[in-house]
Image (tube, rainbow, N blue to C red; front, side):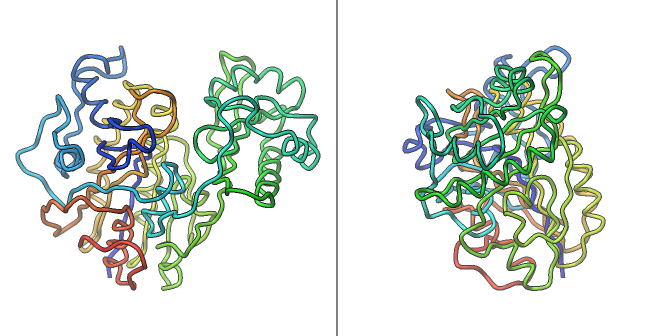
Length: 409
């Protein structure tokens, strides 16, 4: 019996979404545009990185060939390897959203077929009766923000007033999400988490579309110039509509090791062990430790959040490129942990093109890079759903197939 390792590079789309126009994202291409900008010198930053985008290890696993399958061409300025190892290809999303839960649930074999609920983009995001209910049940004097906003911007704008008044900063985005920022010192982390649990309950009891996540966004610092979000983020998600790959593995007696925010995304359903860490490199360190603990038949499932949270949403091309290159340099450490029969899959949950308009996710195809001892090179056709990823893991680990998707193994 073998092990499986599923790593989601959060927001690392490769363009070519067949329904991108319906989401206002026709032409979005996270990898392609980062590569193009870097090739033109627009990804240079003193002391961080310079020159064309260099991802030799993921390129050797078929990343550039997957990008060509998704878009019809190789990314500009990147060196195409003469030889490729492992299964490689692209996948399109069928879920009714371009958000984190939709992407992850579909990867785990459960596409989202219902419509998420969203908050208005103009004027107040949250209607007066919702604000009143939150204020009373959450025992706060009121809220600040009440709009669509970037998390770092709204903290800089309202952080001092929040610290003075005790009013939490509440905001949303184009995703189905209610976000709450609060200072760990003056408001308190445990109070913030309890407040978000209250908001989650209120939203669940309201009629209308489902709101995917309530996100606690704790921060520290004493002035707008020094405010910094911490690693104590917590997502309160609605549970998936059906059993996912994680549930099916758990029912089969296997252990699912969740690293990063995976537990939150799946509302802690089907999770065996949970490991938290702050930042991509710390998440990779934690993953390597968990790989040593994983037994035959287990799944290690990691989300690398920095690509999305720190660089995609903030439209930081140089930062995104540097983060990709840092991750790529450490991939050999993963390879050295593998045992005969092990399978690794690198993929993404959506795009977040840092060159695109706005600050939200982009509808794109995602890469599938699959490797392990004894796995030969093969270009898999462009998959019509992310669920094929979960079904491939199910087949590899020897459990019954699910209702959605089909294995590429």
